[in-house]
Length: 185
Image (cartoon, rainbow, N blue to C red; front, side, top):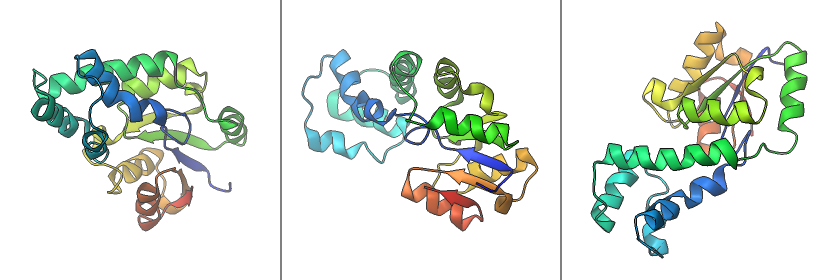
């Protein structure tokens, strides 16, 4: 990698959290007494934000509370997985350390909220590789828009063309490319 700056996605790129995210809706519903929700209903939440899926759970499964309260409960459950269960992708720690030794300045830009990113990366021993963490919530837009990438580049004081973006989601990689970032999939 020949860039002086790097933006890393977390979920699916640095850590293997996707199996936990894919099961969290069912895990949450089970905790509320809803067992074996129809797979087609669970498929519908995949493109939703946390608040949208929380509102969906309220409507479809009569879960009490507000979308914000339900989202907080789900995030609390995921926080436990980030604190105890989620693992690094094979080779990620070695790669990060090699980039750091070369003087590459790095950050994490994630759809996952910063406290969960911090808890996970600290436990896994790689938090010190990153200058800062930024979430889509911080900039008010998902990775279908370039906001989080551009905000990270700005914090580095770098032009997008000087920054490598590491992504596992095709839509996010396409967004980064369109914004002028060197992108690694």
